[in-house]
Length: 295
Image (cartoon, rainbow, N blue to C red; front, side):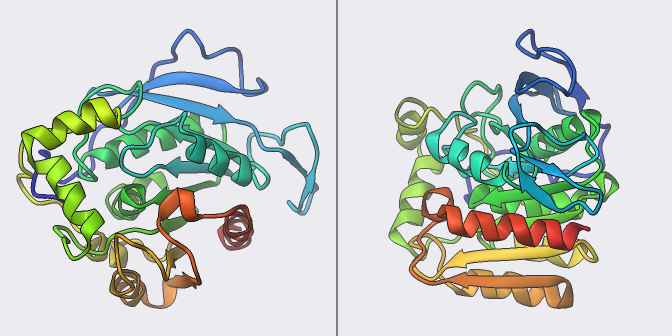
C-alpha cells in the first residue's frame, strides 16, 4: 500500500512458535486467554482468545448460550486495519459480534499496540497472521476462518495464497485494496505521507501508537489481486462499501474478477471503510456466510 516499509515476500517458512505469556491461564476451557506469540521471523505478537457465545448441537447449528463450544468448532481469526490493535474498541466490537458464531482470536500486528517490531503495512504481516492461526490450531480448533479489514483484508488474501499448508476453511476480506501504491483518494494520500515521511512516521508512533518501518519494500510483495487466484478452492468473500473513502469500487471488482467462481462479492450500500463502518448486522451476515461455507 505504500512505497515505504521494508520486508520480503512471505514464503513458506518455519512454522511460528507459541510461547505463552504469564497472562495465559489454563487450558482451552478458560473463559479468555491473553498471550504473546512469536512469528517465524522472531517478532513478538500480542494475542487474545475469546470463547464463542454459542453452543452447537450434533448438526453444528448454533444456539445462544453462556457456555462455550468444544474446541473442534470454528474459530475466527481477525486481522485488524492499519493503526488498529487488539484492544481498540472497534476491534473488540468485531470480536463480540463474531463470537456469536464461533470462538475468536484477535491480535495486534507488528508495530501496533503491545506487539513488537515495526509495521510493514501488509508485507510481513502475513507472518503475524500465520502465528495467530497456529495458536488457534494449538487450542484445538479444526476450522479456522480468517477475517481481515483494510490492511488486514489484504493480509488475509496474501496469507491464504502463501500459507496454504495452514488449510484455512474460508477467507473474508473487508474494505481491502486490490493493488499497491494507490493514491487516488485523499485518505490514501495522507496514509502514504504517514508511511513514507519521517514526520509522518513520528505522527504514526505518537498519534496512532503505530511504529512504521522506514525502509522501502524490497522486493515488492505479492499484491492482493495477484494473491486471489492462488486461494482457490478455499471459499472467499469480498466485502466493500459503496461509500468507502479509501478504495473506490474498482478495487473489490478487481478482487472478485480474480477470484472467479470460488469468490463472492458483497457491495454494501451506504457503508464506509473497514471495522468502524461494519455494523453488527453485516458482521452477523459474515458469520452466517462463513459457517455455511466452511462446512
